[in-house]
Length: 190
Image (tube, rainbow, N blue to C red):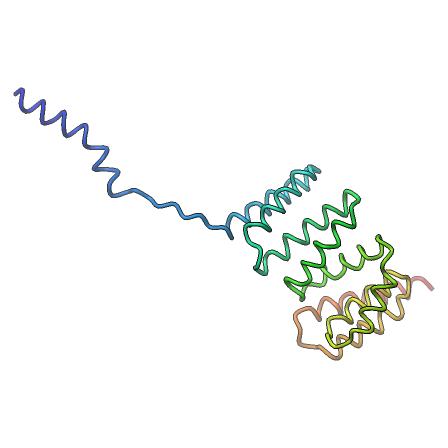
């Protein structure tokens, strides 16, 4: 009987080891998933108007996943926070990086053009983008800068030229929708 209890006692002591032996999980750190989570936390902080915390979360997301297309979203979000708190000079780099990371999102161009206007660089950048016509996406910036400078008619013409020359790009439907918005504004202004 004594041997039975000793054997039972030994088995009970070893039971957790045997049970855990088959279920030991390996933890893999996934920077892309973590970057996505940090971006989502940043968005929540923006909604709560906790801008410093949002900035830190967006920076963390960018650091974890610096060379992916999704990083453009993180840069854009960071730039919007900087614009909200009144730092367009910090936002400029963020919006530029967003456009470089993913150049087919119209919102990124809009934010960049607005930032140029707030910094007083819209006219200079318009000259730059007009002279650098080798990239068809530069027409988007030219149109947006015309709009920011108050020349909506030239903006519509420029956007229309872009839409006609690049009908199959992913960004073209957003440009066409923006043309409709500007035309509506021009018609109602008269």
